Length: 430
Image (cartoon, rainbow, N blue to C red; front, top):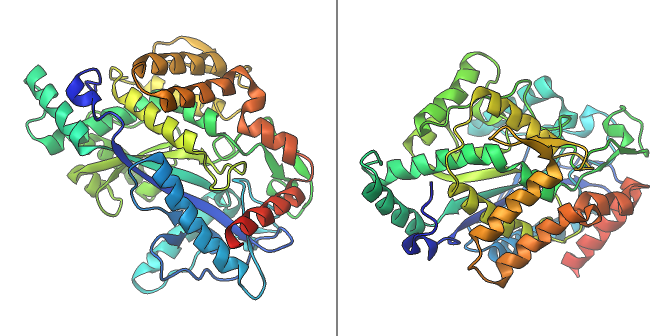
């Protein structure tokens, strides 16, 4: 666990690197998915996700939440101006849940050629296995790496404290991230709850071709719920080492339950240096990826800066907690905790904590925020304002994004969403 109260570590506690990956669907002026090819091939920060009409913006690594948002805004602007200037203007759909879908052909698989042709083959496999409708969800992945000075200070303390500590820094860093990931499995359902922002769907998402109906299913985030991005099993991963973690993912490939490492749909993912691979993970873990973030249509960038800061605060706090040492039963329960945190009324669903106690999501979240407030008691105003902002979401549900969005967009979802998409684009173009 992170020696967070030692001054040599605490002085660097909020030093780290942020990277944001934001997916958005390109649409026409009528609320239907665009069928034009993507045209951002000359910018490595603007790529395609599953679909040809799904733009993904990837920021460089940034030093602060504010810098990460600023970078995201820059690339958002490049995309918005490019599609606004097309012969037939297109828009970026600002919600995680898609607009009108006529059929699966509305979600064309991204086309790659030559050495990259395997990317299209992988998407065709996903289409056959999970269906393209599920692939039409959009969201944000938040990547975070702890600062070098922080990790090296903690490494020296760990070596002085225990003869069993890793002998080399790189081995310590891998162990640090693996233990962090396990603790995140236990507690990061709270991130699903605070950033849930997709309560409303168009009827065409669940009934083929039936466009224009508004659908609310008791969920604050459909993509993070049992209806969203999950495999057909509850993954049980080995958090004893980086190699064991990678091998436990490989075991699902060997058994045929998944075909590729990236097919493991889980809210937490450890990432290696360079292109993602299991062998790469064994060679060195570089950062942790949080994959449960909805697009937030209430802010221009798609993610509130306070949510980026809260994610950092949470990761630092989680790293300082005792190892969760999750059993198979605990890991199965953790999947259910994530799905429960995706519900709309968080007083009606339960969280089972690692100690076996159960309470509503609201009560469990307040307990975590209480612990975080005590942990960061000597930090500045911005930290405590951020924690107060998140606490209010559990004290007054009307302050949660999903409740606001349902109120504003729950009737006439796509029509009102189009108005917002035009307004957002106008802000970038003018």
